[in-house]
Image 1 (cartoon, rainbow, N blue to C red):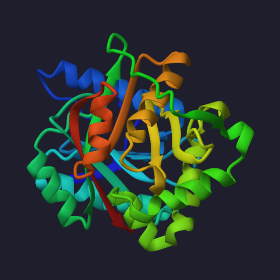
Image 2 (image 1 turned 180 degrees about the vertical axis):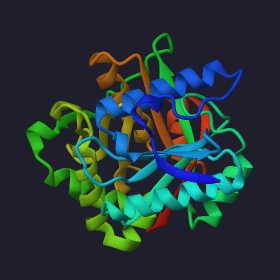
Image 3 (image 1 turned 135 degrees about the vertical axis):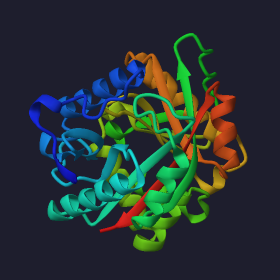
Image 4 (image 1 turned 180 degrees about the horizontal axis):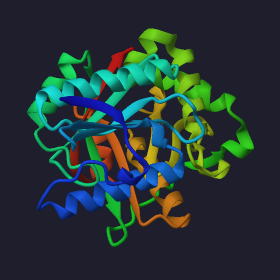
Length: 307
């Protein structure tokens, strides 16, 4: 008989383990331990599947530290189709009970730490059957200490959030959204309008771990605002965060300038590994990461479902 339940204290943080796969077991246990310590999840949000006294799968609800409502699911270990279906159903019910209206999940390829999402075809079918749809087909980029430091753009001078306040960031982001190629932004604009989507994204970035001086607007020689740089830290890594270029600044390489600026800010703050994401179809942003010395180390599909 298959049972879905909250993990017992002695089952954390390892949850389901795989025989002869110490690398995966160690990495996923360390990842969940970090999520618990950082407030991204809670013990009561960790679900396991049990069959005949043996753990056969697991899933964990996730949110931004400081929030009380879960946003996504991580560490989905479906085991088999029946187990995966039951885990996703329980994850939806629990999140809904806690006040969530939507639920997201990301699938990285190739399979790698810390989640080691093997069996991608099974995972995608389970997600589709559970009501998830693809919201972004994306690419992931990585810069590490030892890679060349991106050259800073001398055409731009920068002013920070601490100096400017939030409104200029919302104003400029609203302008950049008029012809954005990012699928996540496009969906938010459809739902909330240009300025509403900009306000929501700035608010989301302000919730992330950052210093006020990290969030900046870049101005050209005529003192016109042309770019936004909002690097930050997640519980697991430093990230380039939000990159935006004004409509009047397109075609001048400013996206690369923003990636370079964010990299410099994060390195100066002590980061030795920095990640970034973009749509696979956003050729300009893809090239901006490459020109700044980042490498495309993985692809990431982002899924979401209404609850």
